Length: 326
Image 1 (cartoon, rainbow, N blue to C red):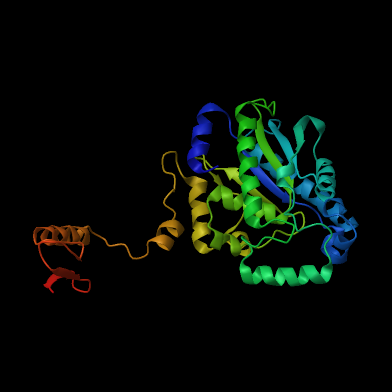
Image 2: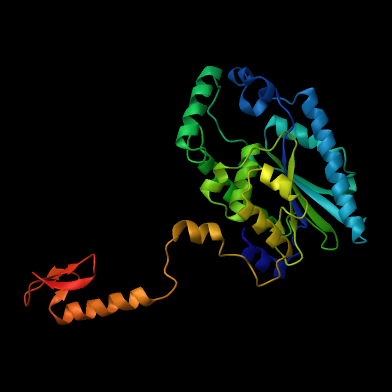
């Protein structure tokens, strides 16, 4: 959902204060690629370090929510709702993160299949996958589709569908959220899906996506609602962090703008859209006026668009845009 949609929803319902994307903890597949050749991807387990990482992440997120709420005098008013990928490593990560939250803070948990890992095929032979990933680098990470699997573009489509459902959950109060409580959505998922989610949300281009770095195990990204009603990564994360994640200086500047933007000042004309498609636009309409004048003269003299007609023989000199006799 973009900023205009967020503004519309704010008129009807209380928006989540934060949307937090958490990558799962270290898994057996992260330390030994051969695990994928004998274990289905969705059954890959966390390592002992991954369990510890999830506990630390849960404590860190809990401190963030406590600190922010306490600063505005609402220490007892925040709540969390979890969405989790159905993979074993994400479910285990959620269990450990959940240890940091008393039951009264958690208003719900939903397993959501659309935020699962990118499908790389079935059992993955290490040597073959190494060659395939080299091909992906040549082809482009976003559009390359793994044999028997998905591309990041495929993941983008199901993330888009998930976002629509997420906002319907909020609009229709499927989360059973008390509007007097600050709502925080925590999405426990995978690295690529986190990047695609942010790409979709902030309207980043494919080229910008290609530059993004994968989050580390149990790293999280906090999108917080700014004072004007737009979400921003710059409220909880420093410029240095954003640059380390692969955001360009222009993207960082946009995040900082979103943190303080007021209603009605949505930054829809992102420079990376206008400049990347139209980098040679004229500053005035003079050329258009000149073209219109030339067309009128050509039509009067029996030559339209540089093609010969029955009343006269003439062509348009494309270099000078002037009529010449032929």
